[in-house]
Image 1 (tube, helix red, strand yellow):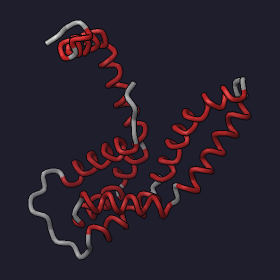
Image 2 (image 1 turned 30 degrees about the vertical axis):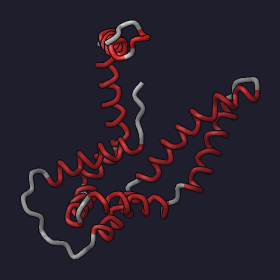
Image 3 (image 1 turned 120 degrees about the vertical axis):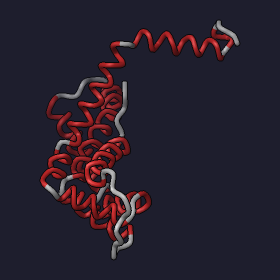
Image 4 (image 1 turned 60 degrees about the vertical axis):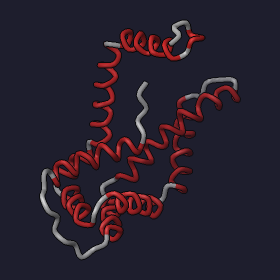
Length: 181
């Protein structure tokens, strides 16, 4: 199963945004801001547009998936719906204590400031602040999920062929698997 990560989602959103905003731009104009200053403005916009809330939702899902099986084993029973909702809400609230807006903004500022110039970040801010940018961000999780689903379907259609190739290559590399080099 293909695992989606926060880095993958951010990379997809940034790459799509950068392609739409920057396109094939030639020489960059100068900016009065440093990349870090521009990135801080982008970080503030990202919180305003719900990126932190989406990250908390994804982190809660991941925490639930990691917590539910051992909790079920410890309790010796399945959780009922009310208990499941309580655990999920508790996980989200606890995560929110650690994934604060300030921490999110610091991370976004650092990462974007390292990878983009001030002008590029200003272009991203302009794009994400536009109706199209807001629409793209509002559908970010849905787009990533649909891409993942499409890729999974394509791999599933060729899974036997894929497994065969992997088995063959492993057997060629490791004599103990029966192929030998």
